[in-house]
Figure 1 (cartoon, rainbow, N blue to C red):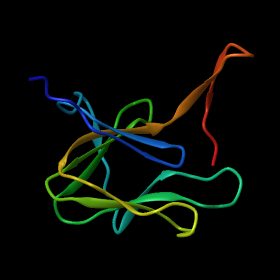
Figure 2: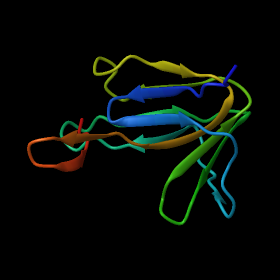
Figure 3: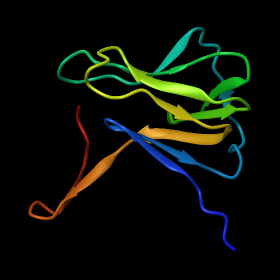
Length: 112
């Protein structure tokens, strides 16, 4: 049976489970929480709690990666905008979600 990877959506954020971390990443040293997306319209940041067992890395293009040996939470500063979700232990790539406009024939970033 094939091992299916998890994908979580939180507003315009997409958190995809990956097999392993890419090479040549820079470790981040954020404390408390890390912003994974900044709202363009209402000042509502999407954040992940940083705690023991949760590490963040970044590549040269600014793509964010997380390795966590313990579950952690994704939440918003404006709690009424999105539910808090729990991300299980794993290795994750964090990016902005995109959608395809079939009329304009272009891919655009999701905005929150």
